[in-house]
Length: 281
Ligand SMILES: [Mn+2]
Image 1 (cartoon, protein in one colour):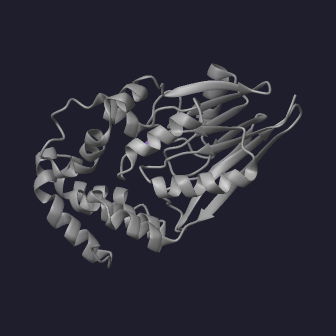
Image 2: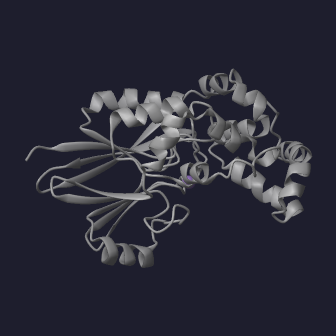
Image 3: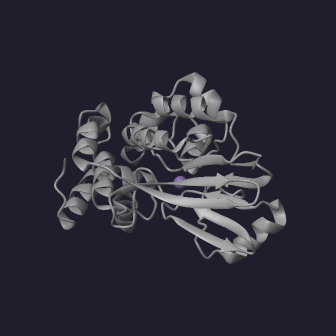
C-alpha cells in the first residue's frame, strides 16, 4: 500500500487568486488527491472558474451553506435587495452546467483512502450551518456513533483546529480567503496516510494584500457589490470577520426585517466603516 498525500481546502469564497496561489504551493508537495469542504463560491467574482478548477481536480467535493443557498434560490427574493446583491451576483454568474454540477453534490461524503474512512462535510453531515468547534465533544460522539469514520473534516467556522478524540481525528483547515484570527493568511491542510500512520499538517500561505486588493478592485464585483466587496477586502487585510460583524451591526437596526435591511444597507455600511476607521475602497 503506497503513501497517499491529500490536500484539504475549504471556504475559498470566490477567490481564484488565492486558490491558484495555494494550488501552486501544493505542486511542491506531490499531492495525490484533493478534498474541498464547501463554500467554494460567493463573496467573490470568479465562481465559474473556481468550480471548473475544482471539478477538474477531484470528486471529493461537498456543498457548503453558500452553494446550498444558490441551489435553493427561488429566482425572485434576492432581486432589488441590496443585502442580497453579492449572492445574486454569484447566482447570475454561474452557467447552467455548473448549477447542474452543484446539484450532483451532497452535504457530506464518505471516502476511504488506504483503509482510512474520511467523512467530509461543511458545517457537519447533519447540517451545512452547524458550528463544530475543537471541543464539540457531544457532536463528535454522535458522529462516531452514526458514521464510524477515522477522520472527520469540517469547514464553515473559518477557525482551524485538529482534535484527537477517542482515537479519531476532527479537523477544520480554516479558510483560504476569509481569515478570522487577526492574521492575514490562507490556511489549508495536508493529510498523509499510509498503512500504519496518519499525519496531519496545517499549512499557512501568507498572501500579499496589495495584490488581493488589485484583484478585487479591478473587477465588476467591486462596482456592483461595493459594500460587500469592502467587507471582504478588510477581512483579508486584517483577519477580522468584518462581513459577519457588519451583519450583526445592521441587524441591531433591522431585526431581520428584509425590507428595512434593504433601505438601511448603504447608510449603515457607511456608519460601520466610519466607526471602524475603514476607508471605503
Ligand atoms: Mn460556510
